[in-house]
Amino acid sequence: MQKMWSGRFSEASSKLLEEFNASINYDKNLFLQDINGSIAHATMLGKCGILDKNDSKKIVDGLNEVLKEIQNDKFVFKIEDEDIHMAVEKRLSEIIGADLGGRLHTARSRNDQVALDFRMFVLNEFKEILNLLLNLIKTLLKKVKEHKDTIMPGFTHLQHAQPVSFAYHLLAYCFMFKRDIYRLKDSFKRNNFSPLGCAALAGTPHKIDRFEVAKNLGFDGVTSNCMDSVSDRDFALELLFDISLIFTHTSRLCEELILWSSQEFMFISMSDKFSTGSSIMPQKKNPDVAELIRGKTGRVYGNLIALLTTMKSLPLAYNKDMQEDKEGVFDSVNTAKTSLIILNEMIDSMSINSENMLKACKTGHLVATDLADFLVRQKNIPFRKAHFITGKCVAIAESKGLDLSELSYEELRSVDENIDEDAMRVLNLNNSKEARNSVGGTANSSVENQIKELDEFLNS
Ligand code: ARG
Image (cartoon, rainbow, N blue to C red):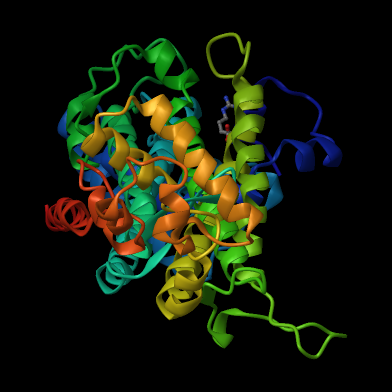
């Protein structure tokens, strides 16, 4: 078969080259963007008088035929066609004739064509992933609203630190995902410019209207420098980074879900729908879904590093290296979407064991900071000294195998006479939680504000 670019060649390509060079096996994913881009291009060529209006219409009709064939699985993808761009153009020429089909590529190169197609794909994924994150926040918020009074230990260094509500802990994740959503929106805005019409690298002598194409395809405008536009894959890198940071967050959430569903914690229980068993140990119920999402973080980071490395040091403008941009993006997008959908379902269906959370709060002297804060606020003791006094109390509790909150008034007062009856009131989990009512704190009044902020965000 003759290649579209075979004019200067006298020998046919090697089969090995053909297979190595082709991207059609994966860039066929871009068929819709490719055809929509070509329709917008052909329409503009007609409007600008570069193509005869009738010819332009026949090309558009032909492209719609090709689209139908692909959508109805009638289209045969062939490795000899190299990529989706040439495959579509070749089929178009078969349908409407080579003379007419051969006019579509006027004032365009595959370099701006692939930049356009891939950009449109990526822009759409910013939106799709954003919507999945919105769903996840909604599901988390449902649990948040049910668990404002469910007290659990807050941790630092994975050691018991201070009591918090389960609602508050989940809210922390809601705000991570909110930032992820803003990041996706920012990425979308920054990249929503059309590169079509940049041609090979330097623009075109044809009197095209790039703005018309951009408007028809839903872009905010056109890119400014053609050389940059055909060399640029920042949009794909941004998507890979945005997904990577989402996975940083989901991996932390999944890690906690795994810990919390262990025998050691027993704070939550995954529904059977989202748990698996063991082939040998009949009693096992494993949180495979959460582990897999945690594990998939590796490939998502890998895809980001791979494309960063491919793009590093590339001379301008287009280089074939850049064909390596697609598979990692497709993989990260699929991984992110399936992971977010299943994570959402898993969280929605898990059950919360409030009693075990409360029981866990009875160890680890969670209210120690409250005693120190009491001495500062009520007795005007410098914080460092208050910290030392409380430390002494903790030591007594430890020596008796008790929690600080279980020591008697006399035992505490023996450490320092500033510890009076009022002090005993702060050694209470709920009082401790409610005392932390500073902006962003775990008290219900603050949690209510955080919920309100997220509700407004979801409704905006
Ligand atoms: N298949 C190519 C890619 O994905 C399309 C652009 C090829 N351009 C070229 N001049 N060889 O990058």
